[in-house]
Amino acid sequence: MSAAGVSRSVAALFIALLLAVLAGCAGGDGSSPSPRSSSPSGTGGAADVLAVKIDNVAPARPHTGLERADIVYVEQVEAGLSRILAVYSSGLPPVIGPVRSARETDLELLRQFDRPTLAFSGAQSRLLPVIDRAPLDAVPPSKAPGAYFRGPDRPAPHNLYLRPERIPFTASGVNAVEELGLRFGAPPPGGEPEDSRTVRYPSASVTFTWSGGDARWLVSLDGSPARPAEGGRLGAGTVVVQEVDVRQSEFSDRSGNNTPFTETVGSGDAVVLRDGRAYDVRWTRPSAGADTVYTGPDDQRVELAEGPLWILYAPRR
Image (cartoon, rainbow, N blue to C red; front, side, top):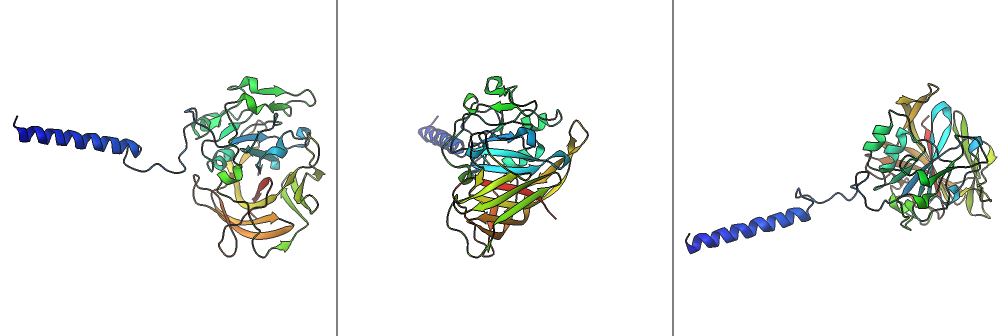
């Protein structure tokens, strides 16, 4: 081969190697990685948040560890009852519960977080494969039997508890509110004075009463003050009452009651309660992988008061 041919071959090899390196840096397909991409379940890597499905009927109370949650979601389940999904990231209590079964709604809700860990007691057999395919790390008792225990003070199924230190999750120290793209800050302009607000489901209710002395919205469940097992009162710094569509799903419980599906993708009206005032806002979430954004009449994002955030999915009227 001539000297010129050798030179051309060397140059071609160099270019090929350079392109391969650049492609590897871009994720293998020449595109930039998505900022909200999630690792498939079981692939490792640190999870952003721990979500725990918690019972919310009278025999399950008082709750344990709920006062340490960064975010508390309340959603409708079968027979018009409500259930809680508590999200932890800034820190973990030693025990959380009572833990109950997951629902299809949880999977879409949790898409707002990157690589969430979901702790739950189980699920309907037809839903389990759906959970396995979801972009989250599922940790039911079958996968972490040493992390769960039955308490002696109440009957099953209201006595299953989680020791979060025994599952493969480490709290990041970052508040889960920030993982959602929300911020703590000054209240928006306007608003109306509000002493109390009740959110009603067909067979359940949650009431928030403003306490200026505590600078918190004190929580009552089904008409009774919510007092965690650790003592005191459950409270929220900010409450969001988000109007959503609740429709029938393809799943039912053992009694034949249809499992409602709460649509958390879309848009609609909401009310933000903070600092003893109520603010009418709009919520938008264009896709399952997007964060929910709350904006006021000026189209500016609404900032939150310090403290736990409670988000209640209220059936749209």
